[in-house]
Length: 239
Image: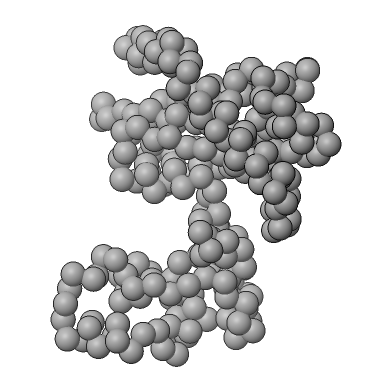
């Protein structure tokens, strides 16, 4: 969790500024972390054992400075997942997971679903995977409320390989409990407050926890709606 908050690093995926990589490295603006490569731990050669004993040395600092990072070395550089996309769905798609449940806590007061849209674009471009998802039930109505906290999408990997994306979004539907409603009334930006606030108060933390529980509970209580949505999707895929 701490590593996933590596908001500033020399190598930041899609937001890397090549001209600044070396400067950020040597100024030590490096919130990422070097970890033993899980894919290499079973290769118990003398050289690798010695490398793990010695740990990360100056060579890895130079790898950062010259953007020579890859997933095949003894140690891998881990940074904020948001440097690629925020939901972590990308890697699950790459592993061809058939059912994916994702909770989107992105700061998105206007409910534009920017993070999800970015994921859909990357999945199509990088892996040829198409995600179809109807977000209208979550979008904010004229009342300022959403009809539902969740929706269901289809994943088409090609070659007849399909899956489902169960997508839960931080949203307000109006049927939340009293202290969620009260906190929202006194904090208009809830539940999309800035991540610059790193010191949640007790009532703030509890409001987010309770909203997450409420949204997930409704997903399971609305089983009929899920079944109906799945049936509709299967008819559309069949046609």
